[in-house]
Length: 396
Image 1 (cartoon, rainbow, N blue to C red):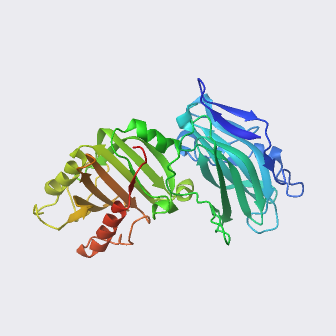
Image 2: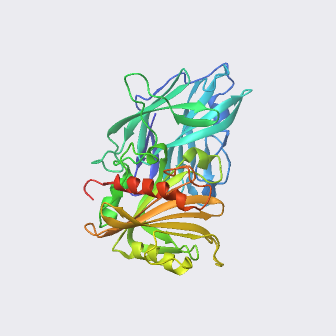
Image 3: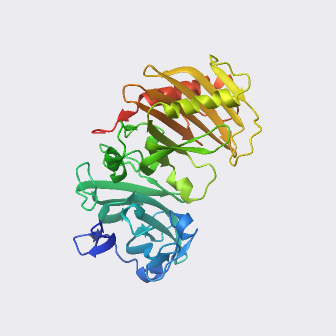
């Protein structure tokens, strides 16, 4: 069976017969049958809408917020030993539909571990919003999934670009399989220029869109959570968001950590906004909240701040006298609710766009989140180097 997303009039799930191959489609001795998995407890990627866990009935569950137009659909299982205990585990393709619209769809590869004949949800990875899965196999603990995804010139309804991805289960985490000799295993991270969300930025944002090259760390080790028109700036003074109308944002996170509800998920983002305003707003917080910070100071630190906003960023330091390809840049290092993060903001006069690049919680360019110190300058310099490696999205 092939899972294909259609956006004609309204988004629906088409289960059309095709040449899809499911290796070992039934595991007779394992106890993990299609019927058992159809009624398993599933852990959705969007817990805010569906709840932390969902009890499937007949392979489906309606969304708690969206009723019959949204929900979770699980079908077509493949079996094989993924954790080396000798019992067959199960892999499933799941369609999470938050709203009944294309923007609410997510095609997911999910894994269930065999727990004495009962399925225990282990982990999942997102395969994309417009992905047609043709083949899933399990061989020597490696899950291989192939099919079609939306390419740079494809319509959202009609993916034509072939893809192959391989995963292994490490402890309870589904991770990209190590590359085999003579061939590079497809990565599940980074920003795919052909992703539908990235392609849409060309028409939604009127300025130059910057994205990371596919293999640039830390982005390559993260998965794209979303990309959309619209961005916000967090004020150091109050923690409040300042929204920019002509802007865009690309967010990448460690989806495994996020799925496991870990605190302080590794993440990185790139935002852009027309005009110099976002850069000016960022720089203005230095003057307003850093007592005694001279206009020409290269470094300023703030250990406390009497703000009452929720959230309120109290610990912070800034690094100035930096440039990104000749343009003045400002680096911030802040702690908010125990989570540390770095950001660099600059204005590109040729593009007429202010940009902000952020990293947090293990995705930082250097492991310098132990406190505030002018000795963190190498981290600021590494953030500059990251910003200078971003590239314009072709055609944007």
